Image (cartoon, rainbow, N blue to C red; front, side, top):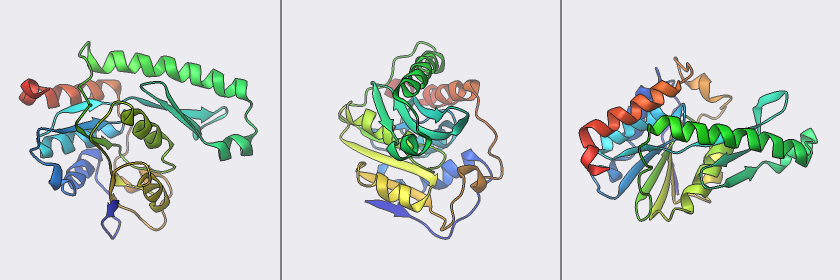
Length: 226
């Protein structure tokens, strides 16, 4: 199941996009079993607005894209917490990427994944996911390889439900994710998608410090609920 709202618009920034997205998630407001998981880095400002609007706790869920050598923006797959790896066989075949190159890139990204997990939480443990509705939030969906890895990883942690929520995404990708998530909420699905950043006035890079700040801001008023 997935939901979309038309026509497509441009968002001022990620936080505005998060507020708009939160309006599509009203069914999950003020529920004790809901947990919002932001995908760093760009998904965290969006997720903060969603968590605030829903009155839900916020945590970070680290996923790393496996970029094609010399074309790092082209994803040949992704990895996520919990030892999950998703590979894009079409890209690997088209670019003729050998296995040893995939393994090399995966090792490097695993090191970065672990570094980020340590840095973002400042020693705080990850929030429990088992038995809760896990709402996975990113700033947009293009190929969806990162989100597919996130869904697969979260499933291993035994949530009661997995919801993918994004402000904007490619229609085909949202439909494909609906086959593996319990629900996909995509506020905008433009007919001609292009890149995620094209749908934001301000799409400047989110920093590690901003991710930490988002977690701190979400935890301060609701620390007892975490």
